[in-house]
Image (cartoon, rainbow, N blue to C red; front, side):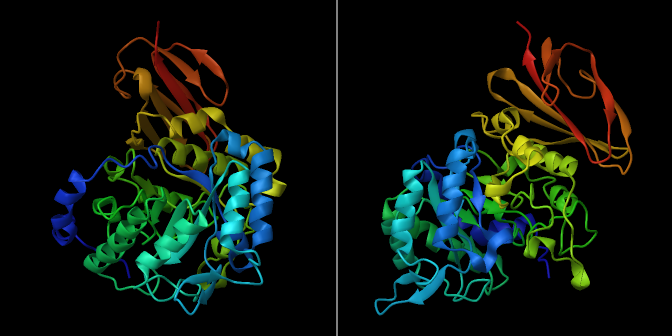
Length: 409
């Protein structure tokens, strides 16, 4: 059941930690939203050394690494157990050469390696978690050369105080190692982590339950892209350099092939989204400054998927050094407009058609979008620049347009 904690209750639970967090040295990790690949939906318990090496090879060769995708994240099911010294070890059959060997291989490709654990005795998949072994596990990860930790919350208590305490304990342990490790807090948004996750050491924090590979599910648990999107309303101000709202993995390119991502209510199986819907979701995640972490088969991307994931201008909007989080400014008649401030006085605007049919749009640049300086406008998808007093056009169902406004010279 979702917890309905008030902002006041959440602040009260963790408020004593904020003063010390503000006094801490500035963190230079995740100054822009992390980008990478995660093993979860497509491979789940089939994760292995061979798989991760193959992903590293592909990402180094297919343009993803050069486009900014840095992290390869091993999700659940990698753990074999604890040894006689209580140190974690990987499943010996699937990771015969150990994680340090794998990290060295990933690093040799110019990429970084992430790993997964849980703030309880067992992970979501039922293998060994990190509760009460935070310092030991953090140092183990550092010794292996890990660059990113996704820390889940299955099997843990519901209250926000325990969540903060457990997450901060791991956050402190990671910092103590001295190795720069991006810390992804994954408690699914139920305890409003945008209020406290950065104080716990987090660099990104999940804002929702797991996303499904469906446009709209109309279900509060098996949520599609639209449900995930709507849960980002009102929290944009909490994201910024060093700490980002995370609306979960991108479904781009899965086409219903994932296991968990395809599971709907009552045994229903989702068939995936259209290329238009995948492109729109990528554009929305980009303008919301969300982490761009995919989980598709990188060895078998079709052209449409590759065009989406390697779109330099959308990635530039997401990775803009100003570090502003885009937010919704208009939502009317099935159309939604997002705005994001960019560096050098630029502004990104996204117009999104939520309707089930093609819809015309028209917005005054001054009155509706609140942009008054002389601007040159670029249509990101069309690659054309123009000047106008209004944005207007027609969008197919679930499609979007993205514009970048630059001050005219």
